[in-house]
Amino acid sequence: MQQTRERHFTPHPASVAHARSFVADTLNAWELGDRLDDVRLCVSELATNAVEHATSAGQDFRVRVAHGEERLRVEVRDQGGGTPTVRHATTDDCHGRGLLLVAALADDWGASREGASTTVWAEFKLGASTAPLVDHTRVAARAATLPVSAGLFASLGVWTWIGADAHGDPLGIVLLVHPPARRHGETDERIEQQMRALSDAFGLVEAGKPLTDIGPRVTIHHGARILLRPEGSHFGVQVPAHPRLVRLLTERGELAVAVGLDPLAIGAPPAEVDLYVDRGLPANRLLLGRAQAAASLHAIRTVEPPHAPDVR
Image (cartoon, rainbow, N blue to C red; front, top):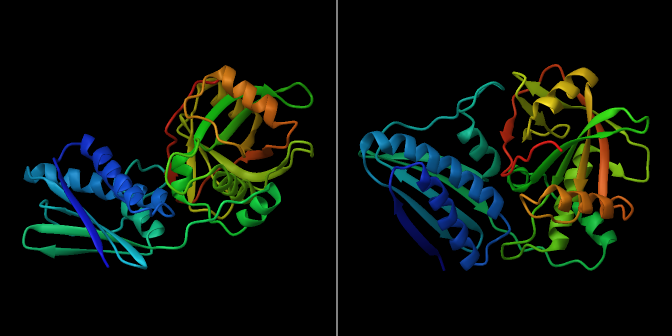
């Protein structure tokens, strides 16, 4: 039996967040949380496009969500005219990656015209929710089967500061952490699986082992943006770029990357982050590596974290 919900939104930038919340609330009510991160990210891109086109027409846009037994479908309809197409943006473009992102995250997508209306849709295959696990060994084994999605990058909290290496020389540090569980089907075990998968993608090791060189995973763009991505990934995360960190990265050509396995609230103050690190290192709950700065970067989709604290 198919279920559907729809809502109309005004063509205002604030409506993008409202559309995203509407879809997230709908999926939570239907207990369909396994693809929520990817769906929310796609809705953000489609709603943003709708606002840009619908603003010129001065009419509302509609978001419709429907699901059957195997698939979830999201549609965004506006009156702006034109047919959406994927544009391959360069690494320096600030826009143009929206439909590329939808194409990468959704299992299928497309667009149709009906009179003056344009409907862009995305479909997602539905799978069984992951059952809670009971120990870290099983969590680590499960992590090997999980993909690292743009939705995960969009969920991360990112902290940066300047520490010191084994020789006492200054070294920039980036910490990637998932916020606490806040949606149906999301547990601490599931979060750990995702963060272990991210750590494996970067090639990180436990804190007690020598800091490994994970290769050219960092680039600086225009002296103001630091981009970090795993090997072979089409997605990356934008790291808060404090001038001191950018200067040190430029001079030294590397920084330390840390991935936390335990959740930490977005926007946690420095003292709480210090405690998180102090507890996580001896317990092997932080995985580490040394990333080199790359001279150039292939076209990737960057995901800006929800919080960008200053360097401590």
